[in-house]
Length: 285
Image (cartoon, rainbow, N blue to C red; front, top):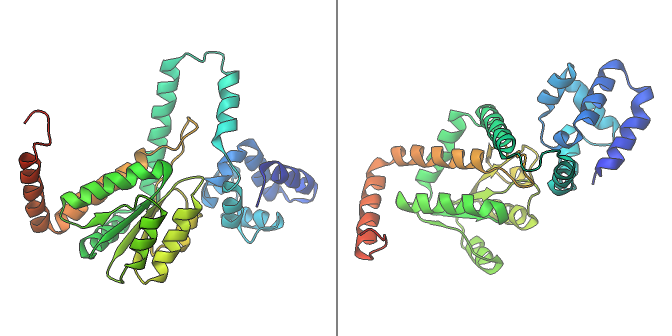
């Protein structure tokens, strides 16, 4: 496990023995240390104006198998809270709502732009096809990932696809025990990652069911169990995770899945709408 202060000390100790290119990487790391946990090796290399291999070699000199191993270790220790509270305390205009609004919008734009590089139409098409073929879909998502899973599950049911989100560990164990190879599991989690979600995804993969990960990094523990990974950046100027990119992925998946089997989707939506009316669900009806 890599503690940020320990890595800073290691980089400082190694600096005199580093070549020019690796010193540039070390400097880029130290200038924005928290970003290392999220930044792809290619992006860090671009910041440092070096080859990606230089980033990997520096990670190895720090004692890691490679850059992803460094990230995985670092992400397990990082919390956004201290950094956010420090910024909050030093903000000369803490009530500047316009500036904060601009900061959130700017980060959202960066996240969505990054999303175009981490998730391709081909990957989304593969995920939509898996949803269309699945006998049933099991959704795993705790904490901040829970509303993403809930939105996806509700939308899938509207399309006539059996989808369930276990409410507790007992229900999760029951669902995992009943999985079959024709089932699909979608595991959703973002920094700092729940052990229970990663363990459940691994258990699902062991049954032979297909696992799709919706997460925010290639080094997320969910990717080790997934046959398909949808990487949605989650950076935020707040102490919490931004869900906008993940929800964008979900919205796209729903649209593509509906079109992939439009007959089933149309029939299901009509039946659900009739049930809404019969149950007098909406206040205006």
